[in-house]
Image 1 (cartoon, one colour):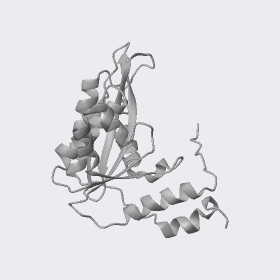
Image 2 (cartoon, rainbow, N blue to C red):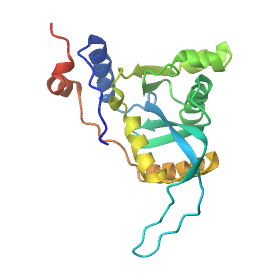
Image 3 (tube, rainbow, N blue to C red):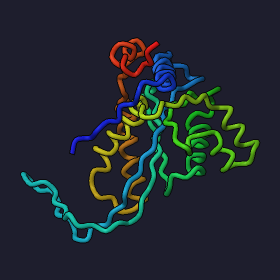
Image 4 (cartoon, one colour):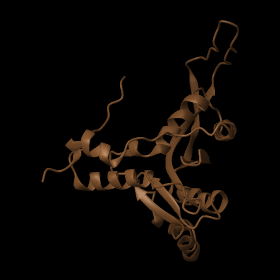
Amino acid sequence: MKKQWCIPEASGEFVARMEDVLDVYQRPHDPKRPLVCLDETNRQLTLETRPSIAAQPSRPKRIDYEYKRNGVVNLFMMFAPLEAKRHIYVSEQRARVDFASCIKELVDIHYPEAERIVLVMDNLNTHSVGSLYEAFEPAEAKRLADKLEIHHTPKHGSWLNMAEIEIGVLSRQALSEYVATKEDVIARVAAWQADRNAERSTVNWQFTTQDARVRLKRLYPVI
């Protein structure tokens, strides 16, 4: 079934957030203010009820259509397009505390020397500074929050988040088959992340604010 995209109605709020994100993407690389796109997805863990048959010459791997559910894991994609780097944080759920733990890893492990991290992400209820205060003591939450310059994509505008593109590549290249446990997911994701970072694969984003004003004119309110 072909995916149906939700086309937003003309809205000043939509275009304001869209142009804000597009302008952020035009900034030159600044090691002190790295650009990071963050998005999340989940993965159903599945156990095979019958052993699969390994691939052979001229014959692909064969997997039985029956499986047993074994829980769900959540994956946070942290993608720095100007550095051609991505880091993936795997958790057992998508609660506020999990988002907060992801942000702490981003700040303290991946960018400890940054003055401010320019963070582009969807406007989910968990994707907020408030989540930091629900996970950490006030002083720690404030420390982490002060390291972030947050830019939210508009509602129905998740296509503006380059991390969503990386999640699609991850799903196709590393998670297209049955994965039984969280440990299996972590191992596959780590291997994919290492290979893709070593290859310096990135997203060549070309869409600008000027392009939006021409090609998406229907989304702009009529004055």
